[in-house]
Image (cartoon, rainbow over all chains, first blue to last red; front, side):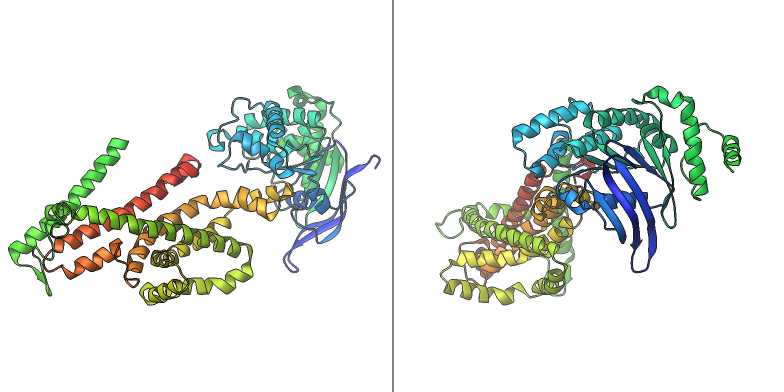
Amino acid sequence: MSGTSVVSLERVSKEFGAGGVRALEGIDLQIREREFISLIGPSGCGKSTLLRIVGDLIQPSSGRVVVNGKTPHQARLDRDYGIVFQDAVLFDWRTVAKNISLPLEMVGWDRAKRAERVNELVELVELTGFESHHPWQLSGGMQQRVSIARALSFNPPLLLMDEPFGALDEMTRERLNLELLRIWEASGSTVIFVTHSIAEAVFLSTRVVVMSPRPGRIVGVVGVDLPQPRTADTREEPGFADLIREVRHLLRRGGGFDVEEPTPTGEEDFIAAEEALD
Amino acid sequence: MVAKRVGMLVLVLAALCAFWEGFKWFGESTGLALGSFEVNDRTLPHIHDIIGQLFEPSRTNGPMLIEVLWDAALFTAKEAAVGFVLGASIGFALGVVLAHSRLLQRGLLPYIVASQTVPILAIAPMVVVWMGGRGFPDWFSVSVISAFLTFFPVTINTLRGLTSADPRALELMQSYASGKWAILWKLRVPTALPYLFAAFKIAATASVVGAIIGELPASIQDGLGGAILNFNQYYATTPTSLWATNLIAALLGITFFLIVVAVERIVVRRAPEHVA
């Protein structure tokens, strides 16, 4: 694989407990700069665990992880990560502006510099006018936008997102998908995005990493060559349905088909595709 | 909303007074006696007599009782306030230390719990003698006794509050490469505030009780504890003086409680459904 790797995973495994559950086994993956990588798979395939290993929130049992040429631990200390969870995890006692500026307080920016950056970010996630609101006064979608702005605050080269739109309704989710792509273009970050939704993974990503459960393994990687930038019309492209079929086939082969099926592609199509591939 | 609250307050107060007077009337007219407790003007004075006593001279040609009790209440309030601040600070600091070390938690917590099983009257004279020997004023010894009662709920709730932060919020703080200190002040303490104020409410009333009890072995005459001891001796002749003193002591406790509630309103910013 050419180009410099932002994230390099070699034979990464993770076991929980003494001789316990094998969450991940033999994960090899190279992620290049400015890629948008989705991790998809059924529950228990270890996709969130993998994300946490990259982010130095848990340690792998074996294997090698390199982030920007450093250990994940050093990368965390260098503030290379912006993290977004499924729930916004905002601090109730802080306003929108103060939630966004929290990481900047840690970095040690002065008040004026923080205020300037918060203004930029509020504009980026389209929350102008809500700066002095408290989290509980916002809708779920708005809360998640605050959480994304907070993650972007110090321009981390790597954005780790763990099902960030999983708790939102379909319409909000599609709108935020487009917003996220716009933000990705603007920020120049590399994104690792965990999702349950095949359509979301294909729509957003440059590559989709399909995983299987027990133990968590990579079944295959699907390159998404749909034109950039993606728009609402991207979902109508003929290639879109093909890619969804490909991802679904890999999921089926990995033995984990208990994922969401938000696309109109019928079961017949899927069986036909599977027969063709066999 | 406010009218409803005030209405409820008046209603409950009226009901309590009605119960008091009703019980007294019933006891007196039927000659009710519970063991040696006989209902009469000495054991259960009229409420209006208790209130009226406040405006009688406390002794011949002396100031009105309410003036004496007002001064005594201020004196006890000073002891209790210092005791509260002392106890809350020590309690909070202890909670922070325990929250950061599982080992210390296991080692110290049993003794902290045991400290509360020691009767306050048993250690109060020792505190007074020990502190007095080191040049502290007697009222400060009372504050220390009061602090002994107030630190405990604060320690327990600080510990509980500090360890109740959302694990994902902790992960976020880690991803910002935050130090322990920053995590404590920016995440753990704000999360713990509702727990802390629950403890402060208990500690507020306990600090008043602690100050009053602490005055007895310290033989301090200037506070409500001294007044209670004093009027106790004259109970046979003027029981209403002691009842009036009790009333003022209760009002002092309620005042402390309400101050904590008011501060909580200002300090704790939380979603409406979390506000008690």
